Length: 194
Image 1 (tube, rainbow, N blue to C red):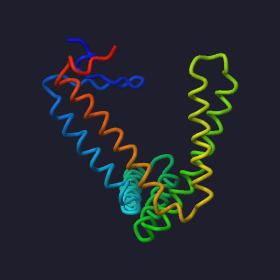
Image 2 (image 1 turned 30 degrees about the vertical axis):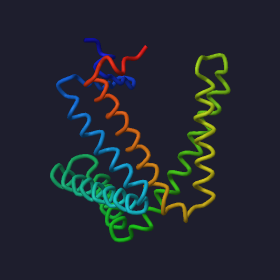
Image 3 (image 1 turned 180 degrees about the horizontal axis):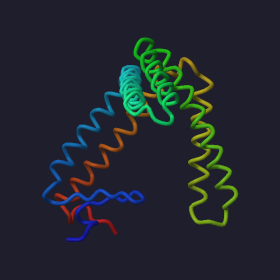
Image 4 (image 1 turned 90 degrees about the vertical axis):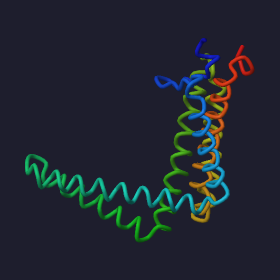
């Protein structure tokens, strides 16, 4: 049985191969991801708060780790590690105490990121018009620019829906991909690729 008939997706150096033995696990994962993505799309503000709280908790843990390492090692860089730990702790606490401000800030950063990356992609595409696939890169860049402008034009009110919606879309498509791979592995003849 070849990799395509079993269900395989390759993304750069990573690949996912679903076999007849594991297709049920991938189907379950796909359903969970798709349902989670659907909820995030229906309740984008709740998803944004959840993401923001998660980032706050990660920053708290990282801040504690930096401070413990600084105090335990007391070697070169002690002051910088201690200051970095305090910064992470402070930002993590602020994100947890003032979640709406964190969501608003994350949305602003996301809008700027889309705008800048879209501009870079567009410039690279226009500079490499003789290369294969430059058109898709240009489309991707222009979509990034448009999305960045839409987010920034309606910021801060866009903070209520942007992060949750984008994460929801990503989870939904990831789930649909896993479901299709699982079904292709279950019935290798029915979804064979040309």
